[in-house]
Image (tube, rainbow, N blue to C red):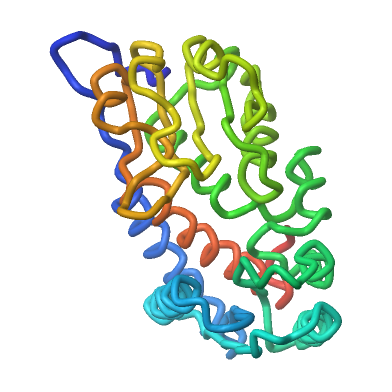
Amino acid sequence: MSRTHTHTQTRTARLMDGTALARRVVEETSVRAAEITRRTGVTPCLATVLVGEDPASVTYVRMKRARCAKAGIDSRLVSLPAATTTAELVGTLRSLSQDPAVHGILLQHPAGAHIDERAAFEAIAPEKDVDGVTMSSFASMSFGRPGFASCTPGGIMRLLDAYDVRLAGRRAVVVGRSAILGKPVGMLLLARDATVTYCHSRTADLAVAVREADVVVAAVGRPRLIRGEDIRPGAVVIDAGYNAGNVGDVDFDTARTRAGLITPVPGGVGPMTIAVLLEQTVDAASAQLGLSRR
């Protein structure tokens, strides 16, 4: 795992501080955004599209806009009524994709049960897909080509790097197979020469797979699904779940007595998701303004 972490019965796992790492990433991103503005007179711009008024989504969008402001990134909010159709949403996203003043586009999801989210995601131009949700972005991640990573998987990889976690040759178990978290994080781990196993709701004997893992990524959205007693001593545990009551997908209290490194909920993966979103928005602006290429 990390070259500096071993397990003993008398110590608990070291916490992976996503809040502190995210702060550093955002500070660096702010410097880059200011330099782009100085050189071009253009401020990097992230457009967020919100369908309806789901309270959690509204709160999350407000937080993202506040982080954008701190990083020197313009934030454009496009609020659409809950009754918006897929066709109308696709039209909005295509219009933003063609707007040269917009450098990155985020569709806040879920967008509503009646919306074909895949059709909506695919309306986002790949060069503006700073949330890494299009099939083009997934292909780029899978083949190691230039492009944008899904933000949560990208944040997870940054955390692993920050804590010197060795991945080559190690066994990684990803619990979850969503298109924007489970699947892409598995591909990013595979690209680092980890041996990756995907598990999900229909996996038989999930505990057996978890017990063999050097790295566990929990991303299934079921509170405390991963039991502490199933964590291999010294393993790295990344909890990307967030459930009601600030509860992750891992039983944190018991897992911490066995893991070598573990992310808390909150304060682990979550802050890194937003940090990567802002960083990739500045990357996109830089490329679109001819200052660099992705």
